[in-house]
Length: 85
Image 1 (cartoon, rainbow, N blue to C red):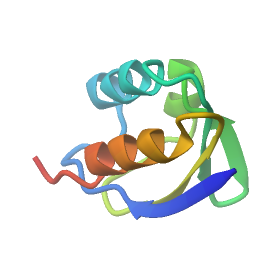
Image 2: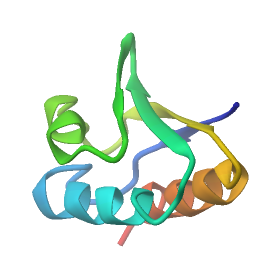
Image 3: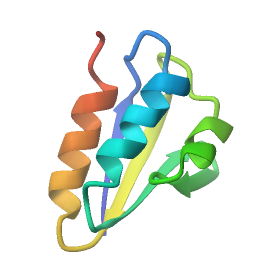
Image 4: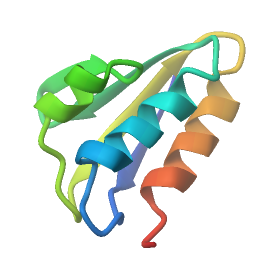
């Protein structure tokens, strides 16, 4: 299992369109992926789970991955949420 702590830098955070992009990218990997905000952890491949966290810009979250491609998944998802565009 691998974890990475990141700051969400997307302009609108992980809301609607950005959450959908995040989930699409997460579903490209076979590893089990989770997103943790404070004490709540959700499946990173679930749009409803991501939306339920209400992640705004500047929020610190933890990406958690377990599986054969966990490192690639963490790198890809971290780059996505840390992109300020």
